Image (cartoon, rainbow, N blue to C red; front, side, top):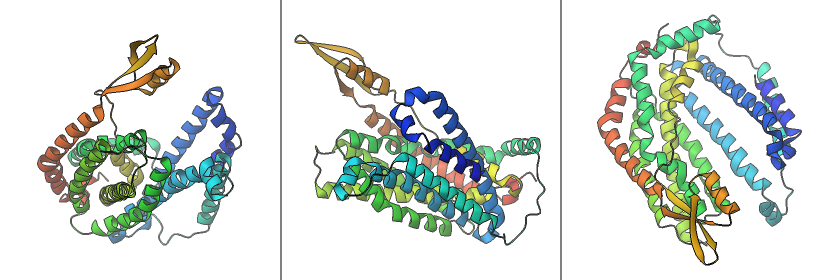
Length: 381
């Protein structure tokens, strides 16, 4: 699977610059290529999750989430912060270094994928798995039986609402700061400083999740995440006009580091719990099922923004300026988007209120009950 992913990235890299310059001309090629890439990557992710269950001893299973955290954050860091910086014309001119093109970076990722895969072919596992290979039909039947377990249903419902308290903050706060004048270079510096703290948080979460209370870090991190979500909203509200002062930038870094640290603690904690309860027979699929319920988003229904067009001394309001389509249409008309009511603050307040109540009356009590359930009760095999 990994060899196929590497090959696909290599093929995409051959025309990457053309795809970026004229995406509308290659919509079908891009759709097919990235649909295949995402599908293959998701399949590989399931396989790796299941592999971790067989590689690690029972007492070290919580550290599977640590490995996942380090791997994911390293990938995000390399593909977003590092690549975007080295791909920026202003950055490379400032530092006098060659510009890294998307095609070159994808070729590097492809080569890295090939090298890691070839290396793994010569690595002998310490223990062999005695589990029989399951047919696709049997895997789906097993997963359906797992979905019917009361504890699994309760955990899925818990995941559906767990992030509501900071949903608006995580999704929009940084975008609002950029909208108010935060430079992308400043944002990249904040992410750069944040990176080592996330690595440390992954290790802490794995170590903390050992024992009889694996959900303890996940539960405790709720409170700092809610407080930091409120803090982020206040930062957006009082964001100064650029250029921002060094003191405010330090405050921004402080908020970014603490928010990411708490988020990584939660991610590592819940991932360790998933690893602990997953049935080894369909371990990767089981863990992916649970992880799916942790990734949900939302839609902005509360912002009111209109396009104001000046025509012969008259001010005309036309179209909406909330969606990207509306903003582009306004710009094409020669108008300017004016926000009359920012739904970000409304949604943030509602989310925080619901989040606090849900943590007190549902999340923590339910999590305590779930972590007390024996691992055998989570399995059907």
